[in-house]
Every structure is written in C-alpha cells, then in structure tokens.
Image 1 (tube, rainbow, N blue to C red):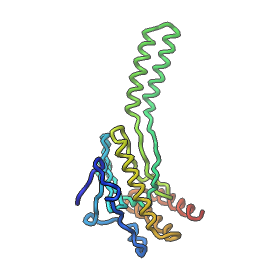
Image 2 (cartoon, rainbow, N blue to C red):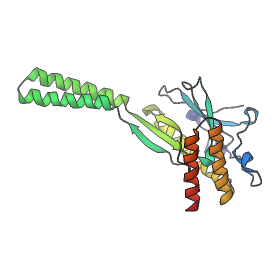
Image 3 (cartoon, rainbow, N blue to C red):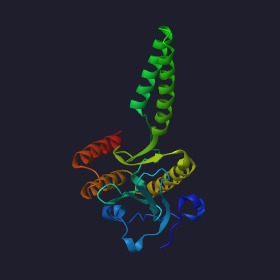
Image 4 (cartoon, one colour):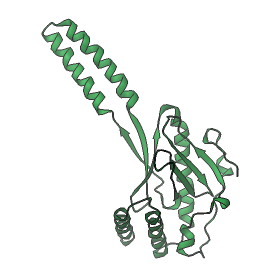
Length: 224
C-alpha cells in the first residue's frame, strides 16, 4: 500500500474515483472496503499539533482518526454523503479578548485620573492579552452529512496548514460530488443516504438521536 502526503499531493487526474455500479444494493453502496482492499491516495496530518489525521482511499472514503479519542479510534465516512461545502467556524479566545478589554479600561481610567503608571500597565496588559488571543484563536472547518446535516468531523487550520487544508477541501469536494453523481436517483438515493447514516449510528460514529434527526431531515429534503 502506497501513501502520498498532501504536502506533495498527487495531481487531480492521478486520483481515480472507484465508480459505484448502479446494480449494487443499499448495503453494498455504503459498505466500507476491507483494509486489504483499500487504496490510500493521500494522508493529511495537521502541522498545528492537533492529534488527528485524515486519509482518502478508494476515491470516495475518508478515514478520520483522532489519537486522543479512544486511543486512536478511527471512523470512516463515505464522501458521497458528506456536504462538499464544510462550514467555516472561527473559535475566538474570548477570555483573552476580555482580558484585553479590561486592559483598555485601565488605560482610560489611568489617563482620566492621570495615574500614568496604571495607564502604562494597562497598555502592556492589553498588548500581551491581544497577542495571546490571536495565537489561541483557531479556524476550523466542520464537515456535515449532505442532507442529514449532522456534524461528522472537523479539521482545524493554522497558518502553516492554510494552503494544504484548502487543497484538501477542494479534493474532498470533488470526490464527494463524483461519488454522489454515481448513486441511483430519486427514492433509491434517499434510501441509500439513510442507510449510510444508519451505518454510522451502528458503528458508534453518531448517536441514535442524531441518526433519527438526520433521517427526518433527509425525508424532508426529498419531499421538497
């Protein structure tokens, strides 16, 4: 088995999608290949120190692994059922920003009362708090199931990973859309999408409550 890290990612045309034959039943459409049948195409490991990794294999599956969770337990997702447009969320380091605001209040109070050491101390405090706040601030991309709208996995972005992460998101979106287009249409596609969420629930990746919520959303989407 050969692996290519995203830092030297293969060209788009080198990553082939394994087609989904229309004749397969629901179980086969959502079945995850055995380890011996997996062709790993790229591996993404963040440089930010976050203990997680993502592997793309057989054109439409990703294995997401968080080392800190259950001693490296991995979850496999079928990209056909993952929304190709992840949500971008910015985690603000609110305690540090609040500390910077308090420093600003000290500056104003010191200046008003002409207590210049207080104002100077407030300025230093504010500057340090802002520096720490910016370092603690994190961008993350949350991947949801396509119509179930259930959060599946997330990738955190640091400055060193920005370009690599955007490249990865583009590849995942393309593979997911190709896999989705290979699925049967109409009611059969609905049934397969529900079956994928059922697989995730039975594997422990999502709870029963989240599965039921996703199922209702999927049925609502197709009724519309």
